[in-house]
Length: 222
Image (tube, rainbow, N blue to C red; front, side):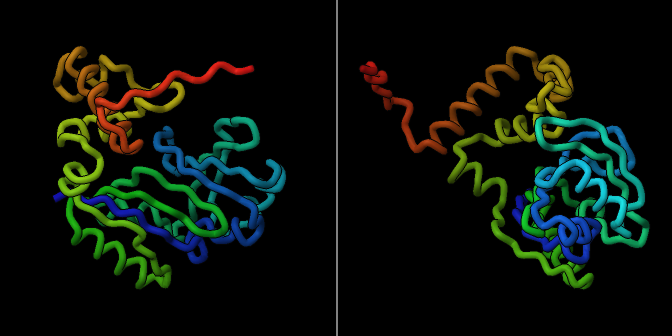
């Protein structure tokens, strides 16, 4: 049964540990799709010069290049040296898929999808053996979360996951609705309706409202 784990991992001892030591104000966010052999990381906090000085000085960083920028953050394609603990690669090797990853104050928070809980245990043990002890913040099975909390059907959940994996929610979109419908082998209309029902289920669940609830119009301002 598919499981989702939210895991905290200290950056110290990983490929990004030296970066946080050099610039404690640094924040990182993993870019889900980037055409490269490395990892796409949005870096922010210090200035661009401060970030690139830290990248230059980090022995765990093999190479990097600036890909994009957005306000006061910068997207870098980063490759780690071969002998560096690459947490993202370890997750893949243990059968996980990183759904999201961000870091601040020297700690990474990863949301990872696994085929079963045994893979979660395997990842935990492997990181612990590397002296990078993770903390499991949250662990749940897909069926449990779908039925009891999210209000989504299995198909709606799978559709939303596929949309995320293929970059449908990225700005700009990395896949069209037509392309996504072909990937899921359903019609464009069926995909549109399934997404709308999924959005409605998430909103009513997360906002704790029922479909019969109404919202009063805003009071006019003076």
